[in-house]
View 1 (cartoon, one colour):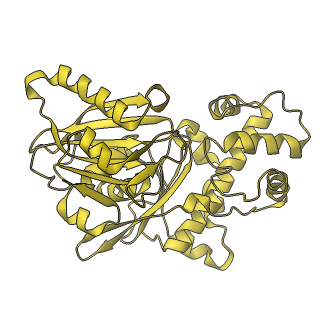
View 2 (cartoon, one colour; view 1 turned 180 degrees about the vertical axis):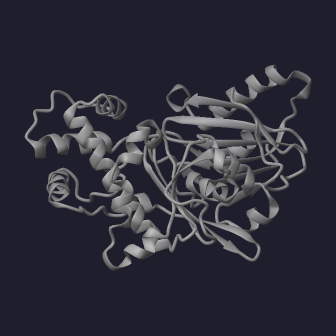
View 3 (cartoon, helix red, strand yellow; view 1 turned 90 degrees about the horizontal axis):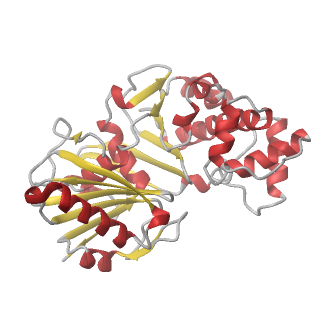
Length: 348
């Protein structure tokens, strides 16, 4: 369990009935609960995706646990907002990096919900950006950010990208699949890496290298370019651990990861006009600790030729709070936000 997340100072939540919120990734599903009329996300639990056959099973497990914990305080959720790691384009939702898939209508019926809102996980992160306080961030450079569009990039199991832009009615989230944009090299070493990876894959996206599924691909390419024998294929957590411990090929992999991520983040900032800041989420970068802030990330973020002054004025920050997507999911239950965002809501 995690400490409750207080939304009181940021917005008024939907007042009718208890609400279920969740952040569903490729590896973990995080659930939280808001009591009727409450502005607190509480009883947060993380369930491994691999240990549950489907989302409905995981949600039922969480609610059964909640019923036992809360006893007389428990009430059936009237509504739910689920942030999912995939594009949401219709009733059927298929998770990009896990075996879970579900029908929104069937899930609403299975959980006996009056309404269900399903949105992309980075749409939820984007909705949370304007609500973040200094305790949830570690800025990289100047802070606070100026007004304007904000972007979030998250290397986790995959690579998510989204933006939030201010309007007269409030913040509008702009979800997309930016992690699948093609990645470009910034020097000769990276050109050699990309040549190796292109030998294996028809399309080399940013996610192909800048994610949990991508780090092993990047490490193998680094070993090949350096002429180092790769003893065995390493999974992402081991690459991070060994890199931070100083193992040469893993360290070079992490250094290259940070440089490529900086270049990609600069591209996103230019494309979105993200003068209000670029935020880094996901589970990988926080594990790098001080190395990330000593890396070439910011240097490469700004290295855009004639547009360097434009990028120099855009602050970047690492999101240190791993539960931010739950805040964004709760925000999506607010009537004004629900009317403005693009994801689908299923009502009875």
